[in-house]
Length: 397
Image (cartoon, rainbow, N blue to C red; front, side, top):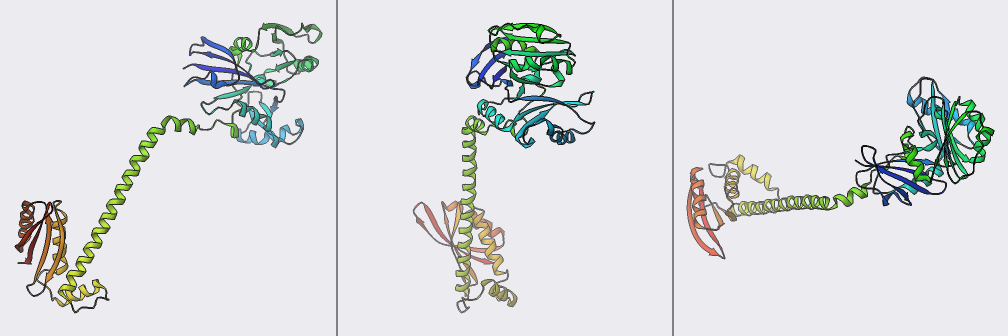
């Protein structure tokens, strides 16, 4: 998997970048206004940023949990800030053996602006680290980067900052002494003026020149790590739903279509079952009142049926069970449907009209009723369109 490493000059809004493979072999390099111009699918994206608005400090903290350390940072920084800690975004390193942590501070408004400038919905920036905290060197070694009028001073575990070159040079000796620096590695733009280092520090200075920021990034990338990632908490990378939506929109559309058809089918089946149930209820009422025409129609049918069952005025088999058996046999036969059902009280039999596709279907129904112990006679039949309408007479034997 290829890696994209970039350096963002937040002061001048300029991006320098390198693309390398897994073996760290350089593939491409250059400047861009937007990372999307060079990003390729699947790349790991790591960035380093510098700005006079960024600063890093060393703090001594007691041996306690990470959460308690983070909770204590605002109080430890109170005397070092202009304004409220709530106006700053900060991240910290883990506590080292000396009981110290490194804290990087950025005004929230500045952080929002920089993240917004770098934000792209097509990919994640996996890490974004302050340049002044990213250098990894030997104990007692510090780093300085000189870019025209702007410079970055990295004091290892003692923090660092970005400021005008003249300001850093003015306080350089004091900073190096306080951080116990024994050697200073300087990366200097060839276009900057000559500096008489002996007039600023007694520390040994090793100078390496570079052509531009791309050349600088190429030279220092082996010395950089992302131990302080600014993209945390509210600035952590968000899931890029729009990207996944565009990538999978046809699959999602197909899935939603299948689900929609499935629920439509279920809804249709429920409607058909309800219609069939209502039709059966109407036919049951018609059958009951044709058998008992003098019964009041404004009373509950269930109550009247129970009364009839208790009085045992029907045929040997309970009337409702007979009706249930008839409807069950017809429902289980896909080629036959119920057209009408009437009870003839005088002859103590049920007259059923069936609609079927062919006479063989009628014979199947007849044999099933005979197996269930019913006396059955087939009445008249007539063809209606492509169907056959047949009449059968049922009586419990």
